[in-house]
Structures are given as C-alpha cells and as structure tokens.
Image 1 (cartoon, helix red, strand yellow):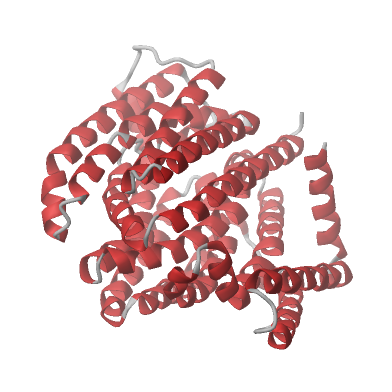
Image 2: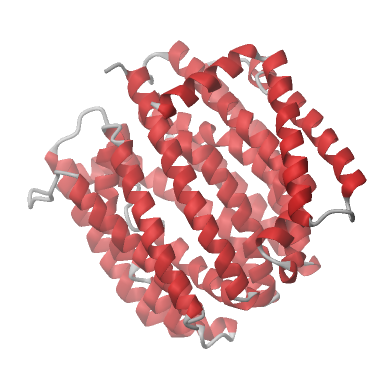
Length: 480
C-alpha cells in the first residue's frame, strides 16, 4: 500500500475516531452541564490544571519520537516504556503528597481529594504512550479509533449514571479515570509489542534529544491553554471558571475535531516525506486547506448563533458563557489552520523550532492573562485570540524556511472557504434578524444552519472545484 493510500485510510479512521468520539463525549457533556452547576465544572477544571501540567513530564515526548524515528529498535521501545512508567510513578506520589498544599493555596478544601484521585492519570499515560506511538507509526488508526470510541462511551455512561445518582463532582472525576483506564486496556489488547528488560542509557539520550523539545512544547502548551484557568480560578473563583470552561470546551472541541483528525495522520505522513520537499509542501497545502474547508464555516456559525447554541445545548443558566464563546471563535479559526506548522517542524526534525514558537506564544499568553484577568473572563478570552495572531507571522516564516512555501499561495488557498463563510454568515445574519423572537432557539438554529450550509457549499463548488472534488473523494473513502 502506497504512503498516499495509507495516509488517506488513516485520515478516514482518524476522522471517524474524532467525530464519533466527540459526538459521544459532547452529548454526555451537554447532559452533565444540565445536571451539574458551573461551580462543579470549575472545581474539576481547577484540579485538571495541575494534572495537565504534570502530564507534560510523563512520557518525555517519546511517543512522537517513536513516530518520527526512521530506524527503531526494541531497545528504544523498552527504554521509552520504563522511563515513562518511572516518571509517572514519581509524579503520582508527589501529587498525592502536595494536594493539600494546592487546596490551601486556592482556599478550596474540596480540591484536595479531587487532585489525589486524578493523579492516577499519570500511571495510565505512562502505560499507553509507547503503544500509541507504535500504532501511529504503523498507520493503525482503526485500532486507535476503536480504543477512543470505547473509552469515551464507557466512561461517559458511568459518569451520567453517577451524576443522576447525586455523586456531583465525582461523576466528572470518574469519567476521566475510566476513560484513561479503558484506553490502556484496549491499546494493550490491540498492540502485539510488550516491554522487555533490555534498556539503554544511550537510547534514552537518543530519544530524549528529540523528545525533550516535544516535552518543552507540551509544557509551553500548558501555559498557553491552561494558565488562564489557573488565574481565573485564583482571582475570580470556581463559578467564573465554570462559565469560562464551558465556552473554552466548545473551542477545544471544535479544534480537536477539525485539526487532530488530520494532525495525527499528518505527522507520520509528513515524516515519510521529510526528504522530498516538493511533496511535503504540497501535502502541507492540502492539509491546511482541507481543515479550513470545515473550520471556517463552523466557527462562523458559532459566532452568529452562540446565544441559540448555549440556550439549546446548555440551558439559560449558562448564558454568561456566550460572549466568551464568541470571542474565542477568532482564536479557534487561527488554531485550526496553524496546527500543521508545528507538525511540519517535527517531521523535518526541528522540534526546537516548534518549542520556540510555543515559548513565544506562552510569554504573550501569560502576560496577557495577568493583565486581562482583572477585567473579567471576556477580557481573558480576548487575550487568547490576540496572542495567537501575533505569533502567526513568526511561525509562517519558519515554515517557509523548511518547505519553501510561497506566502501568497498559502493565503490564496483560503480564499474559497473564506468567501463561502462570508456569504454563509451574511445569510445567517439576515435570516436570524427576520425570525428572531418569532421562533424558539432550536428552530432558529436549524433554519439558519441549513440555509448557511447550502450557501457555503454552493459558493465552494463554484469558486474552488478542486477542493470540492478532494472533499468528495474523502467522503467516498469514508463510505467504503
């Protein structure tokens, strides 16, 4: 099977994994949002801040190193596994010991047991990292998709039952732990590799030379994506954090669906093309344009229909999340198309370049959050969007050095999706103005979304037939 066929097949399964998993998890999340209040979500979000920070240290970036490395031996895999498990165990013990101090810092005594239970996550991540790397390297995305769908469904059902029985915050904690646990079980069932005792410090250094930059990126990504949670929780409290978490959850949901689907396939595919610059450049163009085809209209719809989305999906008591959601749309559009920049850097063996761009973004984000948090949660959302647009030119300059892309061609590929989204947004705004107040929110959502989608697809088919054909081909592969 050729690399193109492997990548296409992997893309389809990754697409099914993301969309199927997100459909299940989102449905469960919507029900939980109606059963549990903002303070409950805020408490778990605050605990997850510390778990997310420590998680960056668990696998040392070994999984991407396994995917990227051309020559791979059992010693590499054994060394990566036992190193990850050792570090995960140390972090597990350290987090349990420090949970009380963290709870005192925020004046939230209920935070202590939540952090302690969530620290089990470190052990699960250590057990799965090498298996994930091997399956991605072999384009075994069908197995990864089955794992994700099973873990999401089982953990979601358990959390719903617990919420209905009145377990409150523990239904959210159980959801995370069961999700990780099922992940590990399915991965080890799907993979034939098992760890041996043959480890080597030399192989550890070899993997770490690549992985340390990936780990650095993960740490900086934490500051980019979670320092706002920390500051909101500290200065504004868990209720405000709950409102912000729901809005940001929608952003992350959309970005995950629209980018992680192709990013997970892009790294092994780009890595195989690292010595073929023309083919890599062409693959980069196609990946970013395909993402923009979906992300531009999706975020446009959220921007204009956020009040109806929130009322229908979460309920009126979550209305403070609406302006946050609308501001984060602008961050989401940028994130969806710029995700592949870091993937190209990894594929070309330049993880330090990706580390640099994430460091710059982290500095801007943290500085912006510190200033903005004094003015409320909407101001924090604005800081998220602004920092991304400042870093984008730097990231594109580095990509140009690696792949020799033409900046004019890079932006030209977005003209079709942009034109279609503008036309779609105009139609939605006009229809909404006419029927607002006359129909319930759900009816407004259905009518506006349907009309907008028809207009968007019509524009794309007219102005960019190549993109339309590529999407149709991908849909046919998925159908088969």
